[in-house]
Image (cartoon, rainbow, N blue to C red):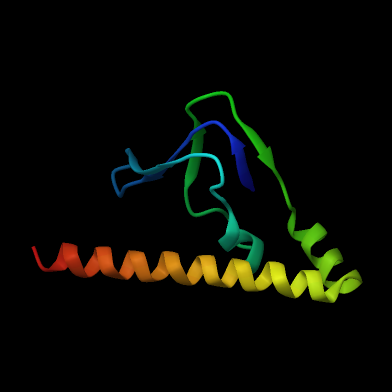
Length: 101
């Protein structure tokens, strides 16, 4: 999904079952990329903080794009991989910073 308008809080349950805020995102943010790629259940829960508008690209629609418009599908996949790589780098940096405390 791509957030077009509004604000969304992303939370994750901790080991005690309590919801812990991870981040908050606004217009232009994308959500659900990992599930788009690997088909696994979502990693976190999102909660709209304001009225929101999303653009949704389902996994099935993505497969159809790849099969019918390979050049466009490749561009979308490269964007997804680049985004996931950037997030992994940021998470690794945050983890290292946390471990150094």
